Length: 229
Image 1 (cartoon, rainbow, N blue to C red):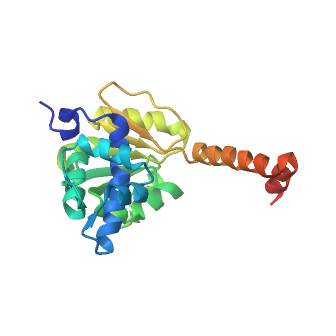
Image 2 (image 1 turned 180 degrees about the vertical axis):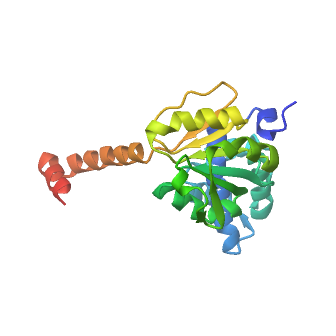
Image 3 (image 1 turned 60 degrees about the horizontal axis):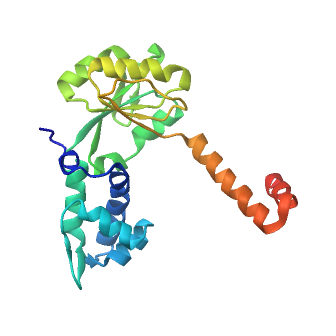
């Protein structure tokens, strides 16, 4: 039997993808001292319709009270539990370029259930450097990290040309969850989960919407003017 509560309940992937947004919104309410929220308030903060929110949360169980809404701390805990965030997940970041440096220095990992235990790079010139209180290690250290630190998630912050080789090394060492920032598609075994973060693709999508808005507002002249800014 799997230890993943979401898998046991058969929660749809689309719902799982929205749970972090609900948790982010609940965290915001808690920081403002708000003890309970209605489904409408929580949905608005998460950027979804209230009917979709209620359907998503129904997969987790019945945590709302009619006429009162949701208790912020309790619902946040239940979502954290479903996402597996009630324990620390050891993470390794591979690739110590500008992006890798930025990710290594990001303090938000520790407050969201993730503990960066290692920084790695293929470049011998970087080995031994200190970044965010961690020492950059060579790629051959991966197997020991899995065995000794229980490394669960690998973050790839390398150029596209190196990403598949890094992915292969992570998989060979026993890592089964990968977050890929490289602009490429990785080939991995069926039992390995990969999430892709492609910043250039997201910018291209925004450019599409900017073009649509410019067309609606003033035609091609507006597009040329917007591009010249």
